[in-house]
Amino acid sequence: MTERCDVLVIGAGPAGLAAACAAASHGAKVVMVDMQPRVGGQVWRQDLRKPAVAAAREAFAELSAQPAVRCLQQAHVVAARPGYVLIEHAGTAMELHYRALVLATGARELLLPFPGWTLPGVTGAGALQALVKQGWPIAGKRVLVAGSGPLLLAAAATLHAHGAQVLAICEQAPAAQLRGFAMQLWRWPSKLVQAAGLRARLAGVPYRSGTWVRSASGNQRVTEVEIESARGVERIACDHLAVGYGLVANTELAQQLGCELTMQDRHPHVRVDTRLMTSVADVYAAGEACGIGGVDTARIEGAMAGCFAAGADKEAEALRVRRDYARAFAELLPRHFALREQIHLAATPQTVVCRCEDVNLSQLHGHRAWRAAKLATRCGMGSCQGRICGAALAELRVFDNALAAANAANPNPNSNLNPNPLPPTPATTAHGARPPVFPTRLASLAGSFSSEGESAAQSKP
Ligand SMILES: Cc1cc2nc3c(=O)[nH]c(=O)nc-3n(C[C@H](O)[C@H](O)[C@H](O)COP(=O)(O)OP(=O)(O)OC[C@H]3O[C@@H](n4cnc5c(N)ncnc54)[C@H](O)[C@@H]3O)c2cc1C
Image (tube, rainbow, N blue to C red; front, side):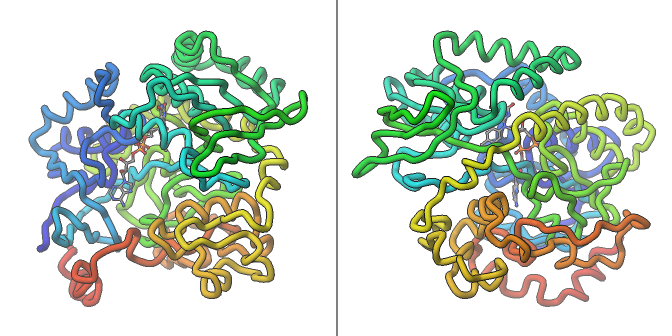
C-alpha cells in the first residue's frame, strides 16, 4: 500500500502534535504517525486514573480541530529514506511518501548496568511511571527512586499520586551542583513553579543528593538496594527500584535518512540548522530528537518545524525568540546532572549488559569496536535492537577508542549543513543506521526499499 502527504510527522508527543497542527493550519495535508495507542508522547502519556494536564488537553483539542491531520496510532516507522518511509500499521506494511518530514521521535531513558539491574522489580524511573499510568498496581508498594535528572521528581510524583510509598529519591548529582541548577531557575519561572509544585506533592519524601545505587539484590525479585553517599554504604529494603540516568535522543530514523548527528555527553542527537532543518533537504527535527530539552522546548520547536515544513517561514521565524529561550534551559541540564564516575564503574565483569541476548561485560572485553563485539556476542542484536545497551556502552565507554562514528557511517553527499561538516565523532553505535528500526515481519520488508530507484522516482512531487 502506498500513500502520499505534504508533511509527514513522526512522533505524536508535544513536538509532533505542535508540528502537525502548525503545518495543517498553513494548508498542508499532514499525516502524523506514532507507535503508541494514544497521542501525547512520553510526558502526556494517558494516565488511566488521572485527568490530562491542561497543556495536554489544549494540545489534544487543537488536534481534534484540525481535519487536515490524519493520525496513525500504533504505527511503527520501521525504515526511512529521503522521500518516503515504511510503516507497519494494523498488521500491514505501508509506504508513505512525503514532501517534507518532521522527525519528532523524542527520547528514551538512559539505563546503566549495575549488579542486580535485571532483577524483576528494577525498572527505569520513567518506565515505572509509564507502567503505573497504564494501571500497574503500585499502591502500598515501597519504591526507591534513583538515578539522575529532573525526570526523577516527575516519576516519583506520579508513583506517589498512585499510592506508592516512595522511600527516597536518590539523585547522584552532588548538592552543590543541584544548588547551582536551582539558582538559575529564576530565569525560567514556569520551571521554578513546576519544580516547587513537584516538591510540594512529594512533601515528606527524602530527596538525597550525592547518593547513587551500587547494586540491587533479591532471590526472585528485588528486595534490597545498596546505595552509597558521603554517609557511606546503606542497604534499603524495597519492592521496586525505579532508576534512570537521564534521557538519550532517538536518532535511529535520522541516521537511516543520512542526517548528520552531533554529540552531547557521549550521546548523539540530530543536528539542525537555524530553520530546524537537518542535513537532509526537507527533513526537519524538533523536540528531544534534537537534544534533551523538556516539554516546553519540544512544543515550541514542533510548532516552528511544522511552519517551516509547510512553507510558512514568516510564522516560524516569529517563534525564534521563544525557542532560543527554551533551549537555553536545556543547556543547563548536562552541566548540572553530569554522571559521576562511580556510576560508570558500578557494573562488574559478570553484570549482564545486553539483557536481550544475555551478554555480560566480560564477554565484551577484547573487542575494540561495537561491530566486532556484536558479531561475536550478539550484543545489541535482540528485540530492543541495541536501544538500551548501545546507549549504556557509549556512556560507559566500553569501546573506548573504537565506537562507531555515526556521521562517518552515514556520509551524506547532499548535506545542506555544510560548510561546517561535523568531524567524525564517537557516537553510540551505527546500529540504527540500517532498517528495520524495530523487529519487523519479513512480509513487511519484502519488496520495500528493494526497488529504491522506482520509489525515489515516485516520491518526486
Ligand atoms: C519514559 C519517559 C517519561 C517521561 N516523563 C516525563 C514527565 O513526567 N514529565 C516531563 O516533564 N518530562 C517527561 N519526560 C521527558 C519527555 O521526553 C519530554 O518532556 C517530552 O515528552 C518531549 O516531547 P517530544 O515530543 O520531543 O518527544 P516524546 O514525548 O518522547 O514523543 C516522541 C514520540 O515519537 C514516537 N516515536 C518514536 N519513534 C517512532 C517510530 N519509529 N515510529 C513511530 N513512532 C515513533 C514515540 O512513540 C513517542 O510518542 C519523559 C521521558 C521519558 C523517556
